[in-house]
Amino acid sequence: MEKLLCNGLDTIVSQALKEMEEESGQAISLDEVNLAELSRRTHISRSKLRTWKNKGGSFVKENKGYTSRNPVLRGYTSILDNLLRNGVYNSAVCLKRLQAAGYTGGISTIKRYLNSHKDLIPA
Image (cartoon, rainbow, N blue to C red; front, side, top):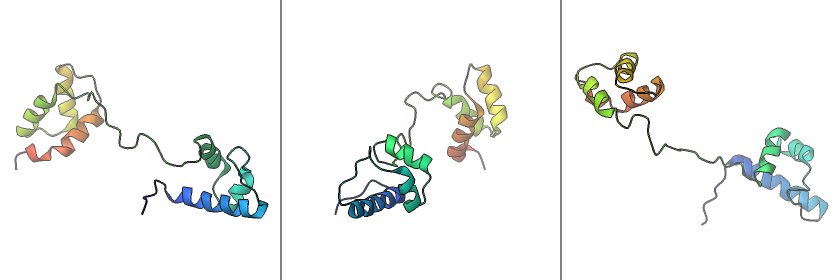
């Protein structure tokens, strides 16, 4: 059995297109599809259907789960680990200490790192 790479919207639109093709008796290409009629049949906005049409007939989002190859914290993780081992886990304090060492990133990156390394905090 082949796994489909689509969400529910792709299934809904493909079913509506098949119904439209059966009614007209001929194949409908993406260039010829009437977005207003498709919107009425699927209850999906014409704006979203226009985006679907421009993407070549797919609602699949690209770059999902992208992570940077060069993380901003690359040279500063040892400093953060030492702060966590010493009981400092306030993200604002960690940010000030890292900025003193030359860190140029933001606080959200530090918060994500602290949340994923809570095991370093002493009990």
